[in-house]
Image 1 (cartoon, rainbow, N blue to C red):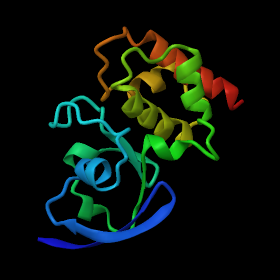
Image 2 (cartoon, one colour):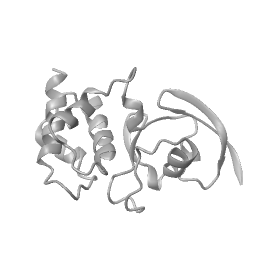
Image 3 (tube, rainbow, N blue to C red):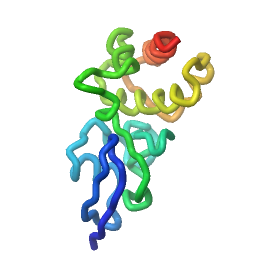
Length: 155
């Protein structure tokens, strides 16, 4: 059964009929074509589906879309402005924080949530913010350096 869901997605108000049991991940990917949010483990263990809900990291694979009525959801696509990638996205590119890129959107969104709370986090805070995100390609060094570079650029 579907019912009307109203919420903000990447700064734009949306109202549409969405299945009552639809996960946020499915709504974003299939309903809106926002495929930056990745489907990884389907169990809330890998962080590939991390988005921001009211500036807080949230796993889209374990969140019902209707539970977010009226709230603000941001995906990795929403970080770019006027066709330009965000400073954090740029840092991931320049510091080689991606390998295959599958985990990157979730890592970026988890880091973005941290940087909005604390623009100048220490390494321990960065590691803590990324603790729920798994990467199978790197040893996390370049990912952490990318977040540090973005934090340094905002100084």
